[in-house]
Length: 130
Image (cartoon, rainbow, N blue to C red):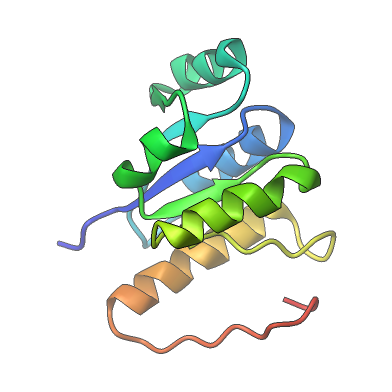
């Protein structure tokens, strides 16, 4: 059986709640939200406790434990998290701005990772119409 796609969520507020719920609804692909990290200890620990996942103290601590980083922070924080994730060789969930609901993006990206693991070449356009 294929190993689950291990997901780490960065951010623990509004967007993270929706993304976590979306991952729980994924069918046909084994995904596991491993944990969450955010700047506010109280928020990340509360988010993790309510969902039975690990609260990581930092992105650097979480990176070795996951395959995919889902950035659920305010836009100004995306660049730093994205660069650190990519430099660590992790996939970073693509965002589509306001063009698609976050749960749709999450499900599609999980399917992309699964296909890639099976050797399927998947091309994603590098424009804002993702």
